[in-house]
Image 1 (tube, helix red, strand yellow):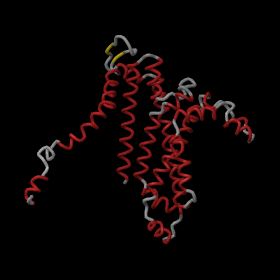
Image 2 (cartoon, rainbow, N blue to C red):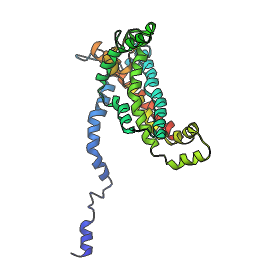
Image 3 (tube, rainbow, N blue to C red):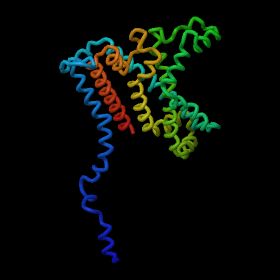
Image 4 (cartoon, rainbow, N blue to C red):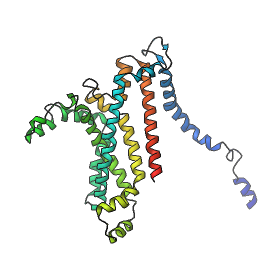
Length: 301
């Protein structure tokens, strides 16, 4: 076979060279995405326009469910609780994770792999198991109160999850415990890419550990910080399992969050239209917050 004939035979067909061929490769994945994400989302948006108990006839109310949410104290409380949880799920883990990652990277700790596994362990445990374990720790006769009594701090003991003033911070501390390992590992991976030459040059110029951190380490891990914030903010806003198992949204409405409100309205109160409106608002809120965080992160790189 001649070279010209072989080249003619190996030339891509018109279908392969077609303008829309790349989109055909993406089509199967898009169909799965549309079936399991876009379609349910559109149906939820459709249900939010109706007054419907979940069975039987429904009544079209337009944007009525959304208007009602503006003056719904339980919903507004749920939104404020979710924003407070962002402090425990995102801000505190970021601060502690940065310090831990910087120490582990600089200190050349022996058994670093072991510490990584231990700190990351909460991420691989089922959230329901985590919630049950912490429910036992926070119980009136649980480990936390017994530990406080053992060191003479009996006046601080209480039913942590039953106290309206402490229930939400108690749930938030579980989120802090969960997310710190993930954030630390992300930052540690980012710090691993920083050339040692930069640190050696800084030390020759007389820079100390704090100066090295702010001049070299922190600017080098901005992309990882943005990723960590996006992941943890999403986790904070869609928290459900933890609240459902530990407090059930109580006492009163002290720990209710938007995801729990969706469940409560749809299955307990039989208000599927209102529950769908909460779900749509939560989706938009998650989207907007993460777009803002991503934009800020990109601008600062």
